[in-house]
Amino acid sequence: MDVAIRDAMLPGLDSRSFFQALRHAGVSAIEVEVAPDYSTPHLRADDGTPFSVADAPSARRLRARLDAEGVGACALLIANDFTSANADGHVEWAVNVTRAAAELGAAAVRVDPLARDKSVNASEARDRFARATERVLRRTADTGVDLGMENHGSYANDPMFLDAVLAAVPDPRLGLTLDTGNFYWFGFPLEGVYELIEKYAPAAKHTHLKSINYPPDVARRKREVGHAYGECCCALHEGNLDLRRVVKVLRDAGYDRDLCVEDESLFKHAPENRVDVLRREVEALRGAMGAS
Image 1 (cartoon, rainbow, N blue to C red):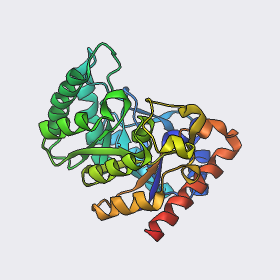
Image 2 (image 1 turned 60 degrees about the vertical axis):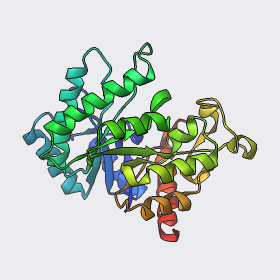
Image 3 (image 1 turned 45 degrees about the vertical axis):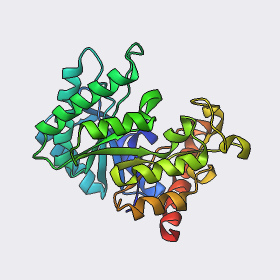
Image 4 (image 1 turned 90 degrees about the horizontal axis):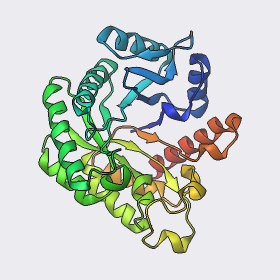
């Protein structure tokens, strides 16, 4: 177990600056976002163009560059929507990115249960997601790469949704991209967030670690979805979540992959200070790992 960050935390950097920022942050693993055209929008070659994972040779070129920089890909991320009118295209995207993950040596692909069409209700979104995910798993059985369904959005932070998908698709390669901040954003009291992390830790294939800093009375109670998120989202070392407790729960459940930092509060800091914030988050997580 070590610490990684999402490449999206370092947007708009040329390749030299990107890898320098990673070294300054103290990490050697990243989650790589992959766009629908198979480009990597936050990870760019020396000429400023994105890398691609559109085919095996392209993925190998990206891996060669990562290897040369001493950086590994802990996971790939896609913002798929299996409820869309183009669900078949999203399945194809997920299949090809899962194959690219195998080429890159990434253990998991984060898949998104979010339904962007708000006319699709929770049960229909759940069923469509489960059917599409089953197709992806069947077509990538030879890769050994896991799929991490993120607890994301207004449906998939509900344990009933997550449990139903896991029951409908009992494939050991399907689990969660366990996002600590999303459960909290959804309105669960802090103690309830810990209970959910403990419940789903055995199913974790990948993680997003983020936190929120609510006043104590707000942290303890049930809240509406997204309550004061823009105001209260924060760096990991500034939030309510006890990182030592979170790490211990994951470790006790057998999770030994990277803890991936996803800080959605970086907009509060000047661009030149953001890597220093990430570095403090990485140090806080490593401290929690050593103390847990």
